Image (cartoon, rainbow, N blue to C red; front, side):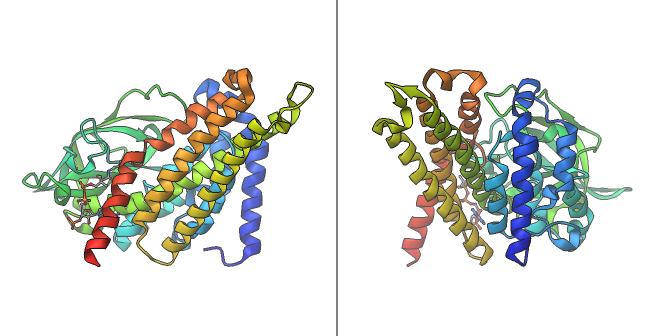
Length: 389
Ligand code: COS
């Protein structure tokens, strides 16, 4: 936790400067090469961004959720692929260890993640288990031999962000073959260099060039029993859901940051571009698009900050996280669409950058639970609470 406003402001200033001076100028190169230069990744390490959410005792900045979302509002005013470099390490890849890991597991892995020495990746989704995450088929079978207790993992994970760069995976696998539902799933810390792990080709995606995803194959991979998160079988699905509660607020904050950038670009264009003898920002139909975007963006920003504060207070934010994820990711889609409209033909051209954002933000409505899954979670929680009352 950053204990004083001045230190938080200094961090936000550094991130703002980093975005303006290093990331924005590199956007086109990253889109063309599909690679983020190592010098930029190193600067992210130097800024402490990999350790944003990791406790100080393990070398991180230990930001509260509210502080984290404020950093994301700044960091994401550029191509979202840059955020993806640190995203799985500060978020879904590390949080399972932090939330449910033992002190030994935390001490063994979190320091390396905090410095960015290794990246974390979150391996839940499978070819046949997307929205229905609890139906996953990857197995982890406990065995004991001369090498001590371990699990043998077999299966295939899909769409795994940062898998090609990962040093470790938070892996969800079925430890109880008789239980085909959520209760049969356990979470593990898996060293990415373990023999038997192999990777598919990088996925060719609609957008977010520079952020890499691929399939990961586990073929008789030995995982020490000491790497079972929390040393308890059957808790892995719940660990994944708790991780996603936080991850969904994170993605909502990312959506707010990107929307701020897109709207600023659209406004700047509307100020400059003249038609019928005056800047197009003078036309009320263009103003309507600007105003709707501004109001929705402000609503999303307020929601994200409120949900983050509630989480910092230790409250259950499953409903709020899904509300934020649903609203903010849909919001940035509408903002990007209006921005294309405001730029007109130029909005469709690569050189203006808006079409790239339009493609990039489409992912936000899909990963970490689609909009429809967020609706299911929100409504289910409402019904459950109403019945309990
Ligand atoms: N925190 C803690 N525990 C949770 C939880 C949460 N947010 N959400 C669910 N659980 C618990 C439930 O309480 C239940 O526990 P009990 O069996 O003890 O009652 C268990 O987990 C199973 O929950 P549920 O019955 O709701 O599971 P479902 O299979 O119905 O799945 C959804 C629920 C659809 C919400 C879940 O599969 C999901 O989030 N899918 C989307 C997955 C996703 O986001 N994928 C993206 C991958 S990461 S890029």
